[in-house]
Image (cartoon, rainbow, N blue to C red; front, side, top):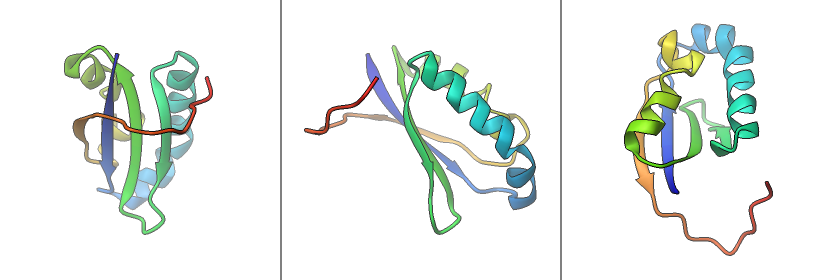
Length: 92
């Protein structure tokens, strides 16, 4: 399994507020399906970051394409495979 860092850059603040509940519901669903490891917004308003777990880039692109923020063009999207290094124990 690989990890992917997905930067959701702010495109439209109004749309981001409007679709925030659906976006958070989507992330909660993906977390319960063990596809999202962690997520959060940037305190400076630049957007947010989601760490996905997937087999490959194509799979994570399919996941991200279902995010209401991406569908509604509230946020841009940049995906990078991420080689996580940590001593922190992730809780499932």
